[in-house]
Structures are given as C-alpha cells and as structure tokens.
Image (cartoon, rainbow, N blue to C red; front, side):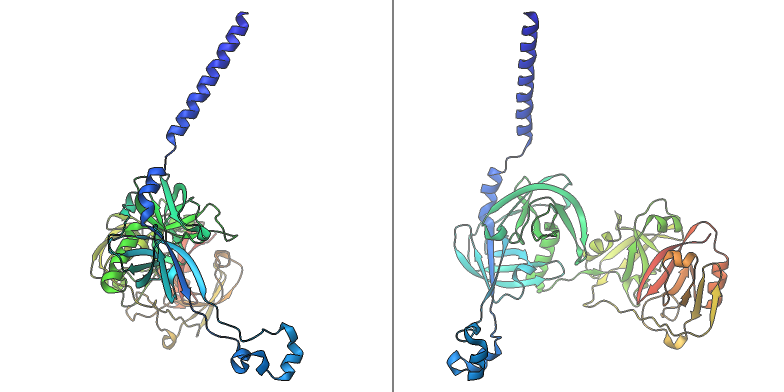
Length: 475
C-alpha cells in the first residue's frame, strides 16, 4: 500500500514538473503579435511592369494570317499563331517599407530594376504609382517616392548593436502573399557575398522567399535593423540561409541617393587576399587574421600613404580586420577626404600608417603583365625555369619600385619541386619571395639560395594580371 502511494506521489511530482517546464519554455518564447500590429502598416507591396516589345518578325511583316503567303499557311497550318503575336508585359513582385511620412520608401534595386512602372500597394489597399528617386546596384538598394502625406512609418534601429542569436522578424510578400510574417534569429554578421563587396550582410534563418526582397527585418523592439535582400538556395526556395542589408548601411546609401543621386564610397587602392594559416606562419604571425596586400594601385591613396605589397592590414581606425572581406566594408563607409589610421604588420613588426581616403573609381584599375622574356635559367631548389621581363614590356599594374612598373621574373617552366607543390604555373610572374623583391633572374637565384629549409615563406606572384601571395615551403 505504501509503495502504491509513493509511486502515485512520484507520478504526480513528474507531471507537475513537466507542466512547469512547459510553461517556462512558453514564457521564454517571444510573442510577436504586438510587433506585427505596430509595424505592418508601414510595410508595402511593390509590383513593377516592364513593357515588352514585339519580337515576332513574321507577325510584324504579314500581320494577320489571311495576309500570310500561301506557302507559310501550308507548312504551319493550325500551329501558326492566329493573328499577330501581342507583346506581353513582364511583371515582378517585391516588398518595401516607408521611412518618411511624405512617401519615401526603401526597397532592393533588383526589385525595381528596368521597370517602366512601379506600383506601391499600402496596408489599407491603396495603390500609388511611385517614382524612382535613385538606385545603387552595388548595395542593391533603391529609394522610391509616392505622392502622399501622413503615411505610417517604421522606426529605425541600430544594426551595429545587433547580436548573433538575437530574435528577428521579417514582414513581406513571399510569392505574392501580402503581409506574411516569419521569424528566426541572427545567424551571423558581416557576411560577404561574391556579388556585393561593400555590404556586410546580416545572415539569418528567417524564412525568406521570392517576393520578400526589399522588405524590413525587425528586432523585438519593432525597429528595422535590416532589409531582406538575398537567399542561398539550390531549389529556388528557402533553405535556412538568408541575408539582409544592415539598416545603417542602407540609410547612408539612401541619404546619398536623395541628396546627390549617386553613392560615393571610400577607396584605398589595394588588391588583398585572405591570410591563411600557412601564410600567417610564413609572415611570422601568431594567428591567421587581417587583409594581406598583394598589390598597390599606382596613383592610389594607398601608394601615397606608403603601403607596400606584403603589408597585412589588421585594423582601420582602431577596428579589427579579422577577414580580408572586412576591409572593403570599413573603407567603403568612409568618405573621400577622410583621414584613416591603418594598423599594419610589415616584416613581422607592427606599424601605423595614416592615409587620406579617396573616392572609389567608376571602374577598377586594370593590371597588365607581360610574358615576354630574355634570359633563362633553372633553380634546382624550386624546380623552376624563369626569365627576366624586358623593360619595354613592363607596363601598368602597381608595384613599389621607382618606375611604378611591375618587376619580377616570369615562370617559363615548372618541374617537380616546392614551387609545383605550391601551385606555381608557367606564365606566373614572381615579384617577391620571403619579403625580398625580385627584379631579375640574378636576384631570384640569390634569394632562393638563401631560403630557410622546412619553413613556409610567402611568395608573391602575378597571374593573368591578378596578384596574390602563396605559401612556399622548401625542404
């Protein structure tokens, strides 16, 4: 009897425990209802129309089927279109949000690109025609304006204060379903994507699908912290990885578009690469971090400030550069004429360099390298046959010699050895090994002869006009 009573008490205790645990778990989950009621009136649906052109040459030439030559009627029969093919309008759908009571709206550039008409539908079902104030393809942002007053607006937050793991909410029109709400957390910050060099994206696991583009990403305070822009997908649908433009970046771009009609970004004038573990060891660093300068653009702010190939930029104005992709983000947010303090590591020693930031050119500097050659020799330690570059064939590019031309030796042949293991191929131009510049075959031979054994050293090469450092280990 006592055993039954004990068992009954245990069962009751367990039931109470699980009930309390369930209530506690529910209490820890956020409630988004008030947030959605507060913010959704300022979220808009954006549809665009791109007028098609007549492309059917036969229809244009002959008009209706009755005007068609008999031979065409015989061969095509009923399969031929009955009457001239009419042009069809192409439509697309996206989202946006209102940032001012007088009708300024933010969205993605790709939502409105090449649109002949832009229609904005408000939460109260009003439809207004919008004009494009300005667009910036580099950041995938666009500013629209509708003719209306006293519109509901969103409250803007500070994306710099957003934390990984923080709850966020997206409101938009996926697949045309208006005002759909999805929630998730911030997965990472400062993500770089191949198509966008100047946007430190916010990565989330919020469900984003076609039609969500341009819509707002809210924090739990109901503040916009990002603009939903892209997804990573192999199927065309959501796969758990989505990206948003930080609102601080977006508003900076928006203000420039409104005031100037274009966006000005800071420019340093360097080609950089990631610092791998092997490269960090070869440069004498205790960890793999920073942006490794592989090329300095001739006439750039970087050249004027004294930056050289082989410098590793680890801080900009006191802010750490962990990945090479951090550098364009930080420099791009500065203005032309701003002074920046760079912390660099040169030859294993820390150095501070002050630089006046320039304006990002409309097109990137092109670097040309020649493969013409004169003398030819072979290095037994590396297994390379290299040649001098004639003075007449040196042009363009950036280097740090007194003539401003790329110097080095061109690889004519790669045999078995350390260079082949490092990935060197014929046509590569070797400009620096272990921090020492190479200007001739004779210098190359001397530097290679003095290389330490069984230790990685950095070697700078130029391949098809693009410079990079690779770790070289000689046994």
